[in-house]
Structures are given as C-alpha cells and as structure tokens.
Length: 187
Image 1 (tube, one colour):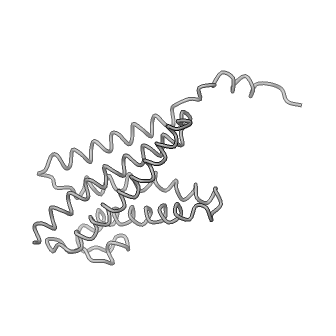
Image 2: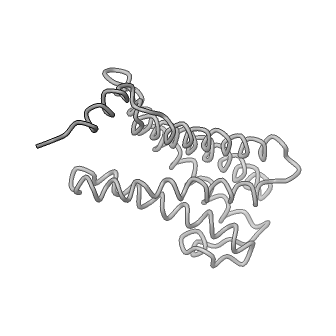
Image 3: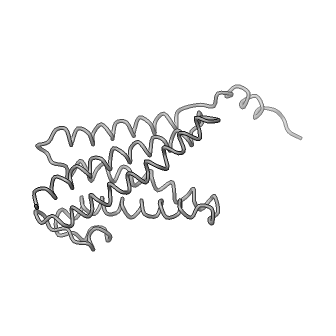
C-alpha cells in the first residue's frame, strides 16, 4: 500500500505542475497586451478557471498522499507551515509555501466579487512567485531516476518562462498610434 501511495504522490505532483503551468500560461494570455477578445476570451478564461480547480484537486491529492505514505516523514503541519519538515526542509518548505500562496490566490479569487479589484490583482500576482517555487520543489524532490517525471517538470519550466517572456515583451497592436498620441502636446 505504501508503494502505491508513493507512486500516486509522484504522479499527482507531476499532473499538478503541468496543470499549474497551463493555468499560468492561460493567465498570462488573458492579461497580456495581445489578449483574446470576444468568444475566444471567454473560452480562455473558462479554461483558466476550470484548470485551476483541477490543479488544486491534484495538488490536494499530492499533499494527502505525501503525508499518508511513510517512506519519508512529512506531517500535516509541514504541509501547511513552510520549512518545518524533518525531511528536506528547504525543498518541502518551498512546496508548502507555494501551496500557501495558491490558497491565498484561490480564496481571493472565490471572493473576488467582494474584494476591491486592486486587492484581488495584487494577491493574484503571487502566482508569479508560487509557480517558480513549485517548479523548484518538483525539480529538487522529483525522482531523479525517472527522466520522464523530471523532464516534464523541466519542460514546464521552459514553457512557463517562455510565456512570461512573451507576455512582457509583446507590444500593443496599435503601438504607433499610442506613441503618436503620447507625443501630442496636451493643454
């Protein structure tokens, strides 16, 4: 049984990082300068939300099986309070911190209609911190003998960094007009 939990923990961890990467990329697309419009924007946003939920479910399964399996000692406190694990405190702690930030993003997203837009946006920006923490957690604790698992996490890192680079280097489609308007003298 313990061996099964170990495999489920690893599998759900990899699925979680893949889904989290897709969610981050979709978030970057919807917030970017070249964001989709019309129906495609609705589809991308719906995918972002639903895959966020899916990533959360797989992450909870990853955490539960990591606690339940006894090959390494990770307790419930270490799953919520960063850097308290007796096993690989730094790497487990990064995963825990990423989880805590994900909780903050998820809770504020669920309460978005009750929060100021600015507050929601600031908390949502924590995704830029939690995603790399999750990547490092996966690379550091991933099964080194399993190239597929470690390679999947590394591929997620490449995809995510590429999407972030695209997001911050893309220009507005009407760049020339914006420059001309900005250069005008206003009275």
